[in-house]
Amino acid sequence: MSPPDPARLALNTVTVRERWNLQQAIEGCRRHGIGGITVWRQDLADLGLAAAARLLKTSGLTVTGLARGGPYPYADAAQRDAAIEDTLRGIDEAAQLEARCLILVVGGLAPGSKDLAASRAMVRDAIGGVLDHALRRGVALALEPFHPMYCADRSCISTLRQANALCDELGPGLGIAVDVYHVWWDPELEAEFRRAGQTRLLALHLSDWLVPTTDLVLDRGMMGDGIIDIPRIRRAMEANGFSGFHEVEIFSARNWWRRDPDEVLDICRQRHRTHC
Amino acid sequence: MSPPDPARLALNTVTVRERWNLQQAIEGCRRHGIGGITVWRQDLADLGLAAAARLLKTSGLTVTGLARGGPYPYADAAQRDAAIEDTLRGIDEAAQLEARCLILVVGGLAPGSKDLAASRAMVRDAIGGVLDHALRRGVALALEPFHPMYCADRSCISTLRQANALCDELGPGLGIAVDVYHVWWDPELEAEFRRAGQTRLLALHLSDWLVPTTDLVLDRGMMGDGIIDIPRIRRAMEANGFSGFHEVEIFSARNWWRRDPDEVLDICRQRHRTHC
Image (cartoon, rainbow over all chains, first blue to last red; front, side, top):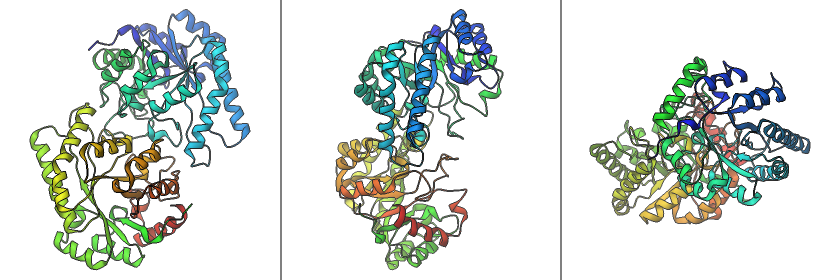
């Protein structure tokens, strides 16, 4: 029953994005002794990529990830090609930021389609089409299975089992980002962590499932305020070789996004110790 | 690519419950040429069980199911025993109504608990504890896997795979109710239909997944208004021996529950033909 290593706490900028820009988020992490940060590509717009990369490097923070590549299911070839081009650029950005991975949010059904199998094939082919570039740039791609309630519009990859199957099919360079909010319900979680092992387990995202949940997207909870047994999931990953950061990613329009980010980070640090 | 048999359309009373009582729902089904009806135990309160049974029998409708038994995860022995007693009564009611099955909605996490494995064991033990009585009364128990977004508070059984595993473990008398709203996203659906086969495939519930979905419980769509490939699922079940009704069960506080039920049933009949 090992406790979480306090040095492994990381922040996903979306948790504080309503109030802080990238520079403020970096300063906040340093002020609160948070060692890692995952940034979004839109966070880079203000400073530009090169300046953001310098700022992150001098901050001493580990860039735990860059969000995101995707979505991949398409209505036509132009849409398909644009998504692939965008992910290739994302890989280059992740390389320049020295990010530990580029998070892939693969997309749901293709526009106008009800054909899940076809969308999943599009996802496979798109990732297959960018993997060589990622390997050349030394950027790990982290496929993030999303909760099945997002299957239609955000990710047709819903389970660790599907993610592992894609990793099996596409080979080295592709791994998995585990978000407890998306996968906590899955009875096959431990088995799929074992199957994934150290090389595929690239990231761990933390928040909590509230009861009741009032919005499908923007009502995540702070760790400890919901019903996810986070320590069980974190330990199971670490027992299978995961040694990365524990990254707080809270979408919360009605609560956490409205609060003072310094208060949010205080509580993140405390809850990391007590509920992760 | 066989079309749906119009004679197999059935109504779950929840679809019209805001406006119609049981007697009105029965008359509505007859008026619209709908051959089956699934009733809820609370629908029986006005008439009493015996009178409701007589009314259903003289209506000529097939009672496609009785909802529900459960939830089973408990905080203490008294709660556990009460749930089992309640399901035993539900079995007797289903027998008297000559219902094709008693639907089990097994419940989420036990009160105050985050231990999914423990809740799942409670579900297994509870169903195991009522199965003999169901077999003696000739009532099939239909375990209904619920969408993973209900795992915390409605059903810790989320997939066909879990349901099949419970059927394997507990033996004859237990089968499965398939609701397209709950399972459409599951990449293992076809494989689990094959595994279930004719004897376990007891019921098929229809509605549609809207994009966006604005409420986790009360925002289901009419067949054809969302993104579920209903014909694919219906045909896959029938290819594996399912020969029961296609039962419309729509929870829709903002739309269908507000409409004239005669209009709703007209549209159900039409959409059954065109989108199921």
